Length: 147
Image 1: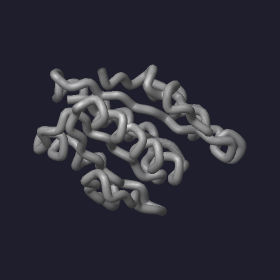
Image 2: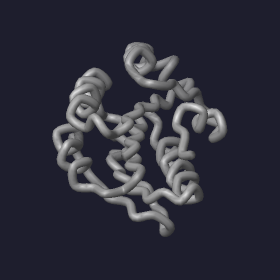
Image 3: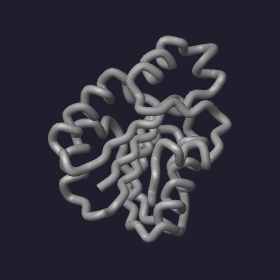
Image 4: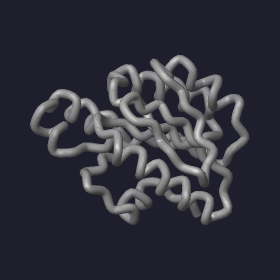
């Protein structure tokens, strides 16, 4: 299983990238489970099954991953998720799910850079990849390969 966790303060772009990644995975013949934890604006789409999870999803992630048989799990995290807590959780998941590839993508926009430099620094320090917005899907796919 490949788990892709999208984090950052942005919401619209996080939702769109989740859908873009899901479409790409399906186009490559993979099954996808999408988890929408975005607080401000839920992901709306008729092509993919999207499970809405509100509140702090971090304690729920081990059970969510253990109970899925999808090839790819895309988690669009709440913009309210604390970066350090997220990355502690992801480290624990990596140890627990040794057969899974777990990737974190931090989406950074100019507002994050200008208004929340401490959040930007934490995201850039711990994420597997930092995606500056606006993103290019081909660039993102260099970090997350579905072949």
